[in-house]
Image (cartoon, rainbow over all chains, first blue to last red; front, side, top):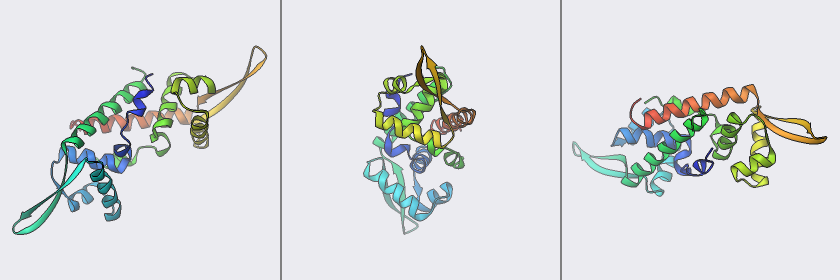
Length: 103
Length: 103
């Protein structure tokens, strides 16, 4: 068993709420706060805190646009976020293999 | 994306040090403290704390035997631990599939 694999798990992404946000943003490039909140079933407070942590890590950015003359705020992964999430999923996959006794 | 999947992640196992201990005990049924410590590269303190948490959750038990007339303490997963770890790995696998965009 390669124990260093576990140390490669990104701490910011490993928390399950943030893992869910990263996963949903990886497949839905632009989501509003409301869409994220409804899709994830999180409270405003919880989602705000997790998004702030992901922004501070450089994984998520806010994009401000106008939709029908109204300001529209959405969130997307940065290229650093896409990369970190890809690496994280690779590490999880390796752990699943170890857990199944095939690595 | 099934967001309830993330809530199914067992909190006790999700911490990476404990995940490593559960993974190694899943494939090595009986390990001494020293063997665990050396395999995982953990400090005594860290390993003790994690093992206590796993014992309190009912996932790991101490087995005390004698080897060449000397007391020998080893650790193993309980059947509850084996079951919880199996479920945890199933959930991780589901998350890997979602992360790859195939679920």
